[in-house]
Image (cartoon, rainbow, N blue to C red; front, side, top):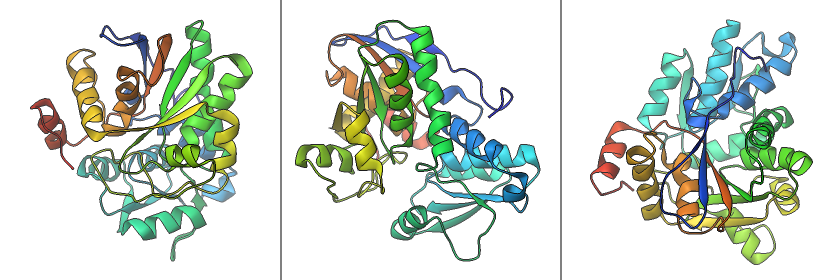
Length: 303
């Protein structure tokens, strides 16, 4: 990863009534509107040119796809994205603007592609959006930045999709700020980590696609249960209505545009899930369809 790919994201205080002191880590302000640029740059830049010369590809609902396409464009190689067919138009349009090719597949096929790291007809460098250690290391820089910028952080609330963001941040914080708790946040429509924490073992759940398209799943990816139990203090499932409220709070009080997944952490913090101390909420992305944002700001929320 190079300085030209990723710059330090802002950390700002949010003036809002809440159980704790709320700070926002604005990962939504990267050039692709998401933290995923960190992991994509870390993985591709550390790979051998022989690995990516024929191109790069990933399985992504949109944000990792943009990160991979952004770096591939800088390197002058083709990029392909296998995306679920419910991916939002805003993210698909962004992939195409960056020169990427999109293959839309049913959710089950997309999930299998991510688990197996293979899709018929695709070769080149596969960048796993979650399980690649280089991706997690890139995400971990967020934790290092937090420890440098803010003292005595009681908890960091992190959206959980596949787990690469939370485990990367938690690994870094364990080294530099071990007293800081990491709490993961999932939409209630797909919260396998919260269910697994409650059951004490990996537990699949019924999954329903929602406007929180960048988080939520039907099950944990392999190895993520072990990482989570070692690094994560708690896992919470957040109602969609609270997520929509948090999107509106970020827009009207923080002047920040966030997608559903990007508002998960604040939604949990506002309801007290992070406790009453100094809380950092990771605003992971801002790639939301205009119609969805308009609906939320008008007082409703889409499915």
